[in-house]
Image 1 (cartoon, rainbow, N blue to C red):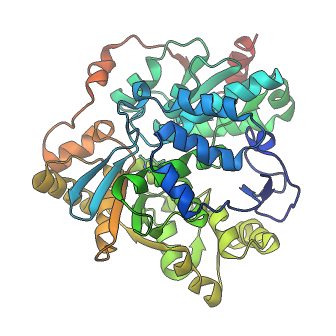
Image 2 (image 1 turned 45 degrees about the horizontal axis):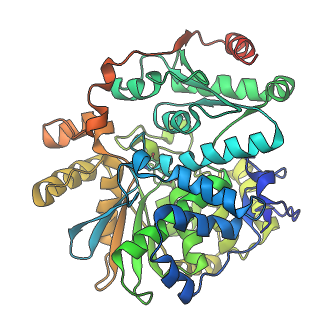
Image 3 (image 1 turned 90 degrees about the horizontal axis):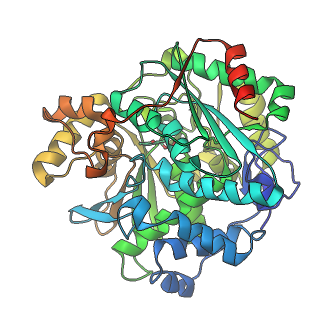
Length: 469
Ligand SMILES: *Cc1c(COP(=O)(O)O)cnc(C)c1O
């Protein structure tokens, strides 16, 4: 299997060449040259597999430059009961007839980013060892992505993480999650500013190309193909849990921000998994819902990007969306380059043609939006009717899922986080504290390891220099 860019560069690269990369050189995203088709006999055979074995089978279709035995070992090391707390890894539970929840939230940071990031940590370690290279991951976080990256990379050979976060602006729980890590290769830099200051420093450091090269600075952003690929697995795993025969179709409702999660569903569907609908659920930041309703993709400015109670979906542009549009437009790289390159830069968005818009249904996509009030209602109702406590992101998807149910088609809502992470909103909805997994009781009291930094790029560079010896 080889990979090409969504913006027309037809250079075919092997998996190991794109594993550690973000954007393609022409500014596009990487996609496989084609989606391997999974036939009926294969689906049947896969039903009997463990999650790790299933992950290995799916990864094998896209990765042919890592020996099979090594790839299997990586999958088995990643998807364990010890890490995810359950043998099923992504257990599905019933809410009511035909409406189910698939938990992607049982990893170390209680959010679905762990599903892919844990594999990425092991793949990075493997590939860096093979090349005899080091990588220093530099990132900024307001809480969630940073902690998933740290838990994935902790203790890994050849990798260091330098994670900037705004001093005093994360919840005590988030702080405890990140700062209690005692691993020598994890560096928490607590910047005396806001999240944007952190992000500006990361950009400034990355724009210093000489420094970037010398210190092998990299990132783990959501456009990484390996992350997306890892996510394809749980669509299959969810499907197998709720169906008995390959003739059954199911729909998935997905809390969406950067379109990484639901894009993996798109890939699964293209491979032949019998998915009826892929329901994209947004919060008040409804860039994606607007597109699927109107065919217009309009990127938002910071004044129009709202801070909501489902914060991991607060995006102004959806970084993985270009991958779907590439497929929607018949893989016309020059048209994608025009829309996402010049179109976004000049007009802040684009509108696809009526014919193109009409094709969306054939890809199974539908969408909807959920607001703070909807979120509170959904959390309350789900608790009262089903004694099931859902987090704010999952609540958004559940609300939109209900609007798209079709008789006879099972709807699976993807649970992307546990309520323990969003205590404030759970309090507002239910007047009580969220449930918390036993292993995380009292983490706020653990010793913390972090370094306070002024908003000063030079100081951050000096810190990196000092710790890269
Ligand atoms: C990242 C995240 C999302 C959004 O996923 P995308 O892949 O960006 O669409 C939804 N819910 C939670 C809890 C997340 O952490």
